[in-house]
Image 1: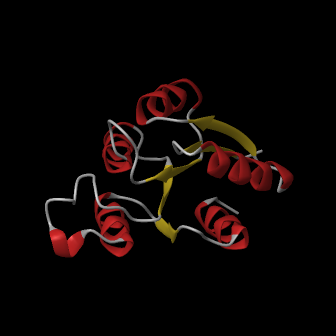
Image 2: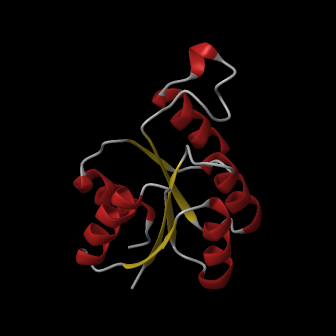
Image 3: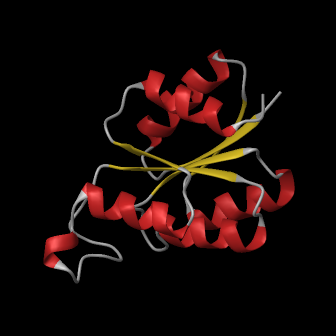
Length: 132
């Protein structure tokens, strides 16, 4: 059974994603911060990490960088609804969902989804990243 780690600071988003992935037959772990996400990854080496890009303290972009450096075999799906703060906030023209997700893809996310997204799209993205 493939394992998925969901990292997002919004409990309702985490719960919705967890329910859908578990119903599809995946083992799911959840984390509400980058720090706890890295700890879970170190302990359990999930097959796929689904991470929000904009989170308090440490942003999902930092998680993606760390995953690429330490766990290159872990596949990454970045999700974002945009925002006006975070690592791109100093660029007024770049504060958009598209800019955050483009940055996530540039540093190593294989798939990106804009919140709110269809859970069918998330399942399809997870399945594309897993070996047959």
